[in-house]
Amino acid sequence: MNRRIALGAALLALSLLGVAAPAVAAGGGDGEEAHHFNYYHGFVGVREGVEPNLLFRAPGTPPPLGAMLVNTGILFYILFRFGSRPVKDALKKRKAAIMQGMDDAAKMKDDAQKRLTDLEDKIDHIEDEIERVRREMQDAGQAERGRVLAEAKERRERMERDARLLVSQELKVARDGLLEETVISAVTSARETIEKAMTPAEHRRLAEEYLAGLERSLGARRSAS
Image (cartoon, rainbow, N blue to C red):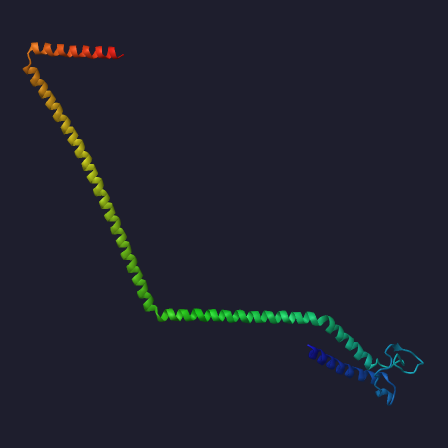
């Protein structure tokens, strides 16, 4: 940065010399005065009737080259003093942005290269991948087949248990009904046989015995209360 400023100052000084020389030649008198070069006379201004010195110069004398150099130096100092830091900061930010962009580009390149390598590896092993997928599908089919068979077996066993239970219940109901019918038939047959075999005197005796037993039972209940 300092080298650039110094180079700019030198170029500006040379340009000022090139501009000041014709101006001095045009504003001077005849002979040697026309080619006299004002280096330092009249830094403050122009005044008639004075000898050219550091502060004043004669009318028609061009501005001193020293004043131009001083002004140029002040200008470059101001630019350097107040403009160098923002310029440096801007250049640093620009450099950081460029470096970040380069890093991102390098990272993207690496990622793309990695994906390309993986893709090429998959292409090289595509047959193995197809075989792996086929085995996985076969294994999945066998597992599904086993699951379906297991569910069918469980459903069949459950239906057999339900059928056995239903048959057992129906057999029990049929057995109970048959037993009831047999008992009723036996009782009816026995009653008919007894009725046919008993005489009227036996009927009266049984009735009297029944009434006597009933009276004894009622007497026992009265005495207990």
